[in-house]
Image 1 (spheres, rainbow, N blue to C red):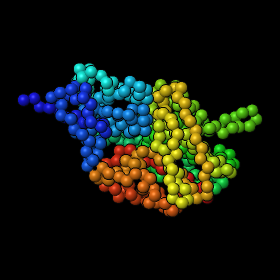
Image 2 (image 1 turned 45 degrees about the horizontal axis):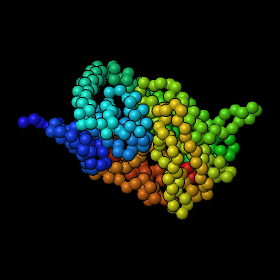
Image 3 (image 1 turned 180 degrees about the vertical axis):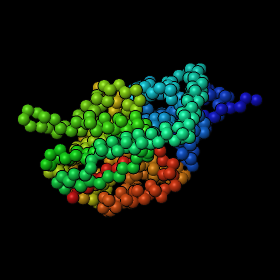
Image 4 (image 1 turned 90 degrees about the vertical axis):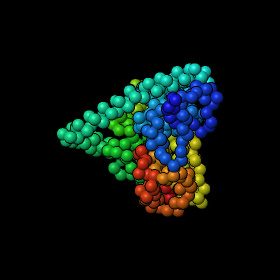
Length: 391
């Protein structure tokens, strides 16, 4: 009797007929469970089949998929529609972890790709085992581990030097920040900068991946995001869409071998008119809360940074009024609020509970929820939140 191997189905819909035929009798398909973390479920099977099914060009969801699989020992077969340019480009640039196939491919082709993923998985697992053995050897001598620890501490100090030491106060705009790296260094970065007497720019960015490659990319972002430029004897403030376009071009030109993708949301506030101009690059939508409690997600189209050199981004505007609050955040916040059963109220519901609290109290309450949440101990992403209040 042939023992079936398990594989995890990463799809919100049922397994299509051609894929079921490709699985045949060899594979036992396991669906996602709400009572366990995605990381734990990926590690328990070793192989997964991802079926975005309409989400293949959703760069925010794609970034979460990349991060989860990159942190696991799992190899994923990814079923993609031919028109999903973002997914083909992003995943096609990843080495080793992803095997791609058209979702309308014949069962024989899908079966062959799955066999390739199956053959690849133990190779990666052996590499990971060797890496762990090397780390244990270093720990046994104490020397390598100490040197590594000192290097990571230095990198963490360097990265923190790129963060603002003091949040500026421009007109009636006031800011507060929650910044919680997962380890010594972070794949998140933020900035709040006075652009002139009446304008302030602020952003949050999130590099795909973790560790040193992601941290290096965040420092590159800080140096490369252009907010103002000289024009003759004066200057002009660069619109958020243009800033993101130029940043995207800069990242693509680096031709990075790993961790070359990131998401970002960048805003510029005119404190004289209270007009907020913003743009997004595959990042969670900023949340605007009016003084009366009404919440609005600030939508604007834009793909991941570092994928297509000629990608265009779009700025949008919204007029604020005194008492309004704008929240920028990375998706690590949503993950950190997932409870032990894998459930969590939406972020807007969470923020609605905090309506009326001062900024610092709001962030303290968010921190308390994260620390008290049984599921947060298993969270595997950095958390960054930037809050703007307009007085």
